[in-house]
Amino acid sequence: MIYSYAVSQQGAYHVKHDIVCQDAFAKKILGDRYAICAVADGLGSELYTDIASKIAADNAVAYCAEKITPHDNADTILRIIRESFSHALDMIRARAKNDGNDFNEYDTTLALSVFRNGTLFWGNAGDSGM
View 1 (tube, helix red, strand yellow):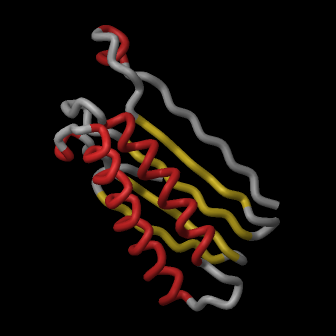
View 2 (cartoon, helix red, strand yellow; view 1 turned 90 degrees about the vertical axis):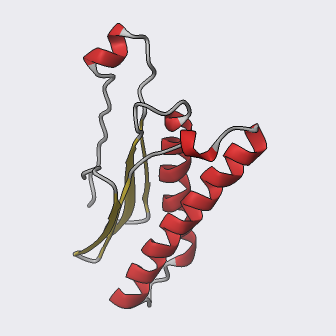
View 3 (spheres, one colour; view 1 turned 90 degrees about the horizontal axis):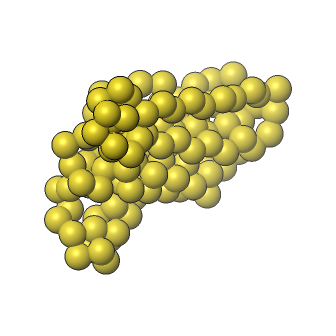
C-alpha cells in the first residue's frame, strides 16, 4: 500500500508582501506498488513562477504515467523521467508564448520520483527536494 501526502505553505515574506504560494505538487498513484510524484518550487523573483510550477509538476507526472509501462527496465524509466522534464519545459514555454509573456518570468524547479515495485527512480532540476 502506498500512502502519500503533500504540504505547501506560503512563507512569511510572501504573506507580508501578498505574494501567492509558488509551490506545486502532483501525484498519480497507479496501484499498491506504483506511484509517480512531483514537486516544483517557483523562483520568487519571477512574475509567473506559480503558473510554471503547476505546469511543470502536472505535466511531468502525466507524461510519465502515459509513457512508463509495466515492462520497462530502469534505463527506460530514467529516460522517460528526463523526457518528462523536457516536456514540462515545452509546456511552460507554450504557456508563456500563448499568454504573450517573457518565458524567463516562468522559472521553477522540478523534482520527480517514480516508485515501482520497491524501486525508487528520481530526477531533479534546481534546488527542490522531495
